[in-house]
Length: 178
View 1 (spheres, rainbow, N blue to C red):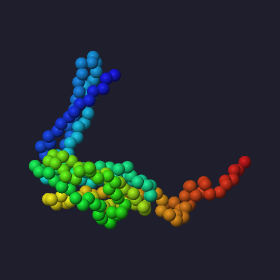
View 2: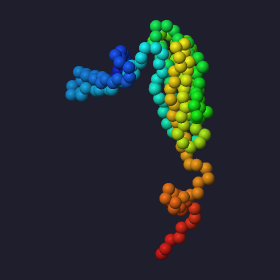
View 3: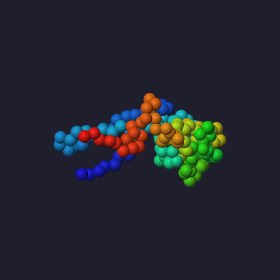
View 4: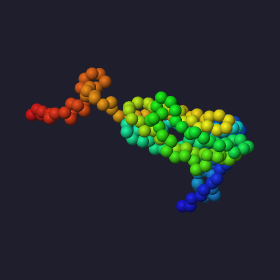
């Protein structure tokens, strides 16, 4: 089997997500055409951040999520200097920027990428805002994460107030009737 690589370009005509289907047909007898969905995000003129919201998912309390990328794109004719990348909001301490772009001077039509993680220290949904300044203003991207696990100090009670199966089945020896 041979592998082939295709380079696909896109020129979105409107702001927002857009999709198309790429179909590859070969001259192999009886081979069905192969399709792939192609996605592109049309950005407004100016300096843009994507995704619009970054959900880092859930991890056990005390663990880190896998890093995910925030991309800042310069859709202007001039170079733009990014500065003061930070995380703000009620749960700001639950998130970290763990990798910064090599160069924060972003040329026209180029990108800068920041890698963000969530590190929840308690159970529940965490929310904060990634922000980075540029000469025309501030880019803001909402961050979400979720601390998974059980609250400390549980009483082995189920949701209905009865002892849970796990407390019962692992707490004592069981008697067997003949």
